[in-house]
Length: 479
Image (cartoon, rainbow, N blue to C red):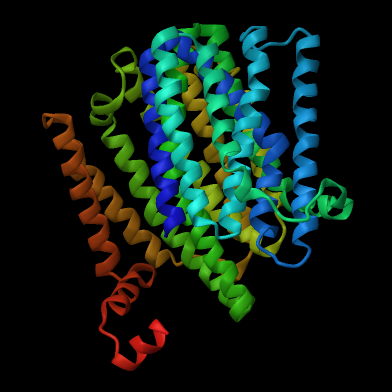
């Protein structure tokens, strides 16, 4: 629970940071900053994310802990060199994606900082270092909301802000350096077989993630080239804030529910894990469907409440177009990916991602989608919906993991009813009151349907948790 709470607080802080930077820089300069940040995210995922995933999977094991830690560190150093060389090669070829040389060279620095922070946090979770995990998030956000915001307010320029963000992120990791040391884990203990195991484990997941980020990067570049920096900045803000919101909410079904399925597999066997995955799909849909509909219906209120004035109008319109695509992307990760991971066959993820990339490349060249940034947003969404269809088709080949359609249908109906109930609330003033009423009303409608119909056994679970336990049972639990 501690890790989930810190994760959500950290996600909320990053969300607020994006809004603050967009307001201080303005659409054109924010477009340049967002392009650097997205490029850094692509580099971080391509070169470093396999280490984060392997850290989550292997760092907690007591056996060969020193060799595992040494192999992770040696791989990280090697990937720093590889990332810098890759950017240097782009620069030598005269490719800078419209950012200029200084911003291009800031991209690997940001990638290294992001990756090191995520890698450190993953190891802390795997090792159950809760205090250090809290301290890492606290130090980073404290530095970010003082140094980075101050530099953004003083310079109004993308370059200094990107440099400050990278520097403060690295400083927070350095401050927690002692907590990350594994005694006896010198780099000489790094093992090629261990590193090879890391790569095999994480490769398909990393490749698909890189492709999905690449789609957003391509669309952003097309917006720059065709419609200018301001249009690219508006598209960037709508995409980035929406993605952060959806990914933060999707953390519970994607990560925590899957970890529970893995636990059931180790304790009760594969059939129990398959039944849990089928239930997780229902619960994931119960989270994502209301989120997507609520976000679309209440976009005008959300915009009035949080979005800087220079982006208003465009933000609500673009968010309405992007939300189904963000739903599809999250559904791939939380509803389809666990099926493949449990079967230890993750190649369908790469197939779905390549399908999305191909669809996006084709759509963005058609006149219907190339006329304005709205067309690019539509192409983005359609690409991810196609990818979800491919992933779901491949996932449904595993018969024991079929979700209960008798549970999915009431969720869909409750979500539709929620959307109809929330839409008139955009007229309520002030926007904070409209948002509060929407959360209360929407949450009540969906929760009532889930508990009333005992969807996914949620009512049974809640009743069991609330039921008083015999004194003997309480005593055993306390012991």
